[in-house]
Image (cartoon, rainbow, N blue to C red; front, side, top):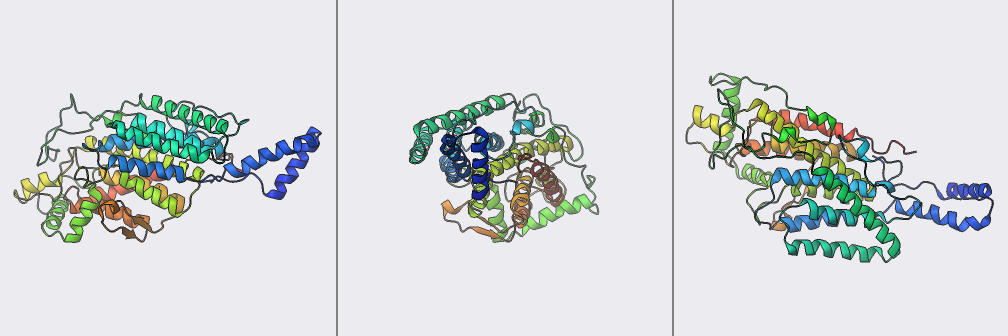
Length: 452
């Protein structure tokens, strides 16, 4: 992925200025041209701190929210926010193209007037403030006041080095992008209800699980418009093991593994299951996708990414946040596989309980692995399989977890659902491969084809 870069080195820049002065016949144009080139030299390297602060602020706002945001809806919303952020700063990325040329049924986005000067950090600031208010449900008046305060504070900061006209122009552009993104989002047919849906019955079929025995969530999510054409039909491969109740079968052994692990859980395995569950309500867990976003932001900050690179990474990981669940839920309701707790109670031990409750939808493929794996693959493609630090629960005083690689983190997240008693191991292994494929599809999307 290309970063915000300068058009020219200083000697080349001056050669171009001299050439243009000769062509247009007048030293009177020299100062004007030099100002243009200087502008292009500086705005390509704008800091991404404004973006990082916005993603951290929304975590602070949503952490104490009660009830907590709906997981899949919040993931979807941050997908749009990432795409909108990129579009709000895209004109400042050399050789870049709009995601409207890459995403399925995305309309043309507002265009900046490149004869005018912009402060792209101010555009991002306005776009994120606007999108947070439009996309994130349940914001209180106090929450909205915090958003306004952040926006105003950054505008005051930008005014120290940019004129009021530049700030106003940049704000207007960012807000126009935010509004266009939100209007587009209203047509994506997003639906988590199960009204009118009757779960199939039969051997190996999913049944509501304890303790709540809730109705299924998301049977129609597969019909939501994805970001990628690829995701219109993407689904899980066929089940690798035929359903069987025979104690000698591979399926029985897969369930027995979950049972045996659950009967002898170590303190570390319980802590790992809890770490990745992000559950427990306000003040205990973290609202999705804050855990993922904190990992993304942490890597970007550690790599000192500038605004252009950060915006592209948030956009591409945002695409994964929205499209990952669409493919996962298409597979879930296609194969309709029962959860381990159901199989174990019926075939192995009627008194067994999973460490964590199973979410109210079929087992295969995995929702958590299907969310993390494509995001982690996008990060691997951008930065390599680097060491990564996870401090998602630092606010609770829990020590950060350190991993030798992004892949190790991704593996642990998947294994955590086995410890929790929620998934079979084969589900996690296959879902990680699904996520890697989606992540590579997203990472292959070239947003700077005109870079030279």
